[in-house]
Every structure is written in C-alpha cells, then in structure tokens.
Length: 189
Length: 189
Image 1 (cartoon, each protein chain N blue to C red):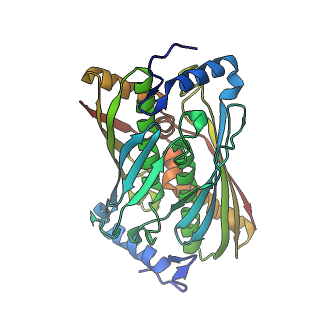
Image 2: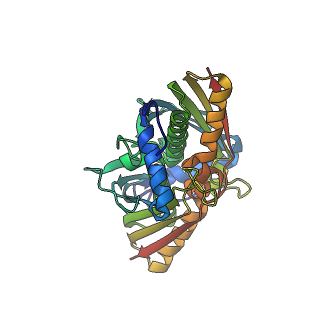
Image 3: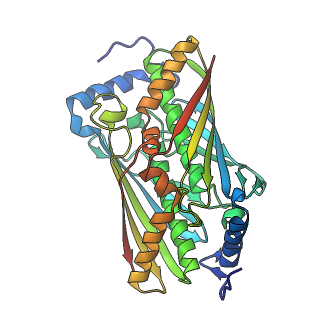
C-alpha cells in the first residue's frame, strides 16, 4: 500500500484508489468490467434507458439500490418533441463527465487540490450524412471541441500536464477518438 | 414534396421529415448542426452537464424553454458515490437512443408500423488500461454488443433491413465505431 499523506483530496479517497490499484495488480482478472444499459422505445424519437447493475472487480455490483433512468429524444427540427436531449448531445455529456472525473482523479493522485473544473463542448456535424442526402458527409460529429477552465493549487504547467494525462487515460475520450467494434443483433417478429 | 398516405407513423411526422429533406436539398448550408454541452465538476467523480441551445437548420434553436440537466459519476468500486451513471454507461444510453430513433425513423419512411423496439447493450473493458497499469489494454470499451427485439407489421426480412439501414445512418453508431477528432483546450489558473 502506497503511503498517503492526505487520503481525501478533491473528494477522491486516494487511499482507496491506491488500494484498488494494488488489488488489480495482484488479481488482474478483477479488471474486467461489463457495463450495461437496457432501452425501450416510447414513441417517435423518444426512448428510455435503465442502468443499474454491472460486472466489475470480480463480482456483480449491487451498490445501486435503484436503477438510473435516462431518456433520449430529439428537438422538433429533428422530428422529436424535446422530451430529452438528443443522443449526440448525450455523447458530449459523457465525454465531459469522463474527462472531468479523470482530471480530478489524476490531480488527487498528484496531490493537487482543485477548486474549479468547468468545460464547454461543441460537436459539429452535417445532417446531409445521417439523412442519406450526401454520402460524402459522415453521420456523426466531424469534430468535437472541448474547452476546460481549471483552477487549483498548482502551477499552470502542472495543471496542463494533468489535462494531458487525463486525455491519455479517459475511457470516453478513447471511445470517441478511436474505433470501438459494435455488434448489433436483432430478434425480429 | 413527396406524397405521403399516412403522415404520422410510429409517432414520426413523415410529412415533416420529407419537408425537411427537401429543404436541406434546396439549402445545403442548413444541414450544419452544432450541438453543445457545458459541464461543471461538483465533487469527487461527480459532475453535471447542462444542455439547451444548438445551431441547426440555419439558426440558433430556441425550442427548449429550460435546459436539460444530466449528471455523471462513478460507483464506489470506481471511487464515486453512485450520484449518477458513469460516463461509459452514458455512452451505451446514447448509442441505444440513437439506434432506436433511427430504426423508428427508417421504419416510418418505409411505411412500417412498429409496436416494440427494445434493446440491451453490453460494453466490456479492462480497467488495466484506464488505470495505467498495463498499456496493452485500451482505456475504452473493447467491444459493445447491442441486442434488439423489434416487433412490427412487416416480414422479418424487412425489419432486419431496417436495422441494417439504421446502423448505416445512426449518428452515435458512427461516433462510436469510427474515430472522431477531439481537441481539448485548457485555460488553467
């Protein structure tokens, strides 16, 4: 166990983090995580996902007493009724949340106390792709710009290094910037 | 304007869809969409995104009277307190919502009435990647499996074709399966 002088920093229990890393080193099979979502169509562009259990650290997680319920839809200009944010916007949220928590974890490990981590994300796409009007445009985002404002008790250079390390370690940054194989199976009736 | 016999199908106003497609053909610059999210760290792994306006169809959208507020966090085994689903699970939700609404839109365009679109998504990753313990593992999902159950008034073969077409046109399926360039800028203090 690594010696820790300030176990809770940025709301992260660094002693727990190092304990988990030691456990993963000792038992690499515990590193396998299987996350899940179930989704059901409601009407039009509107659907609802339920998220609760997952496999990780060598067992089925039971820490969530109730499921999380998340909706997705579209604004009227994209044929929905604004029942929820649209899936492309939800990807921006996932990317923001992942980069932010990775920055916070990295800062805690480097004994940097943060006071503010704010970000604005912009994703640009040309709807001629997804509508099938012009195949020279892709369906998804052409690019995403993430602008962070970060404040903490470290020199600017060290905060920049934390951001770079977070990019190199973020789960969703990897999912968005690199290809993930997706199998789609359909049972139809 | 394409002639439509049943303008509302699966909750989708197909007359509006074809009207929009005609407008995009006439004015391709209206196809540019710019989606946005702003995020702020709360504590530990917990952050909150706000989603409201976007640019699309040639103007700033003002159809949402209030912002959508979405949280992200982690379960205790990943150093959070279950304040919200984690970012990787949120990606699964975005993918489910996008494939589902694309299936519904494609079915409406092909005059197929659906009665059920349900899905289960599983994303697998090895935490040795994101924790930095072993660089031979990627940070994000190694693969995602999506299992749909679809019911509607068309033969199984036609429903399968609709699923294939939705894969070929889904915004988030493209974002996840292909690389998206992401620029991360940080203003630090």
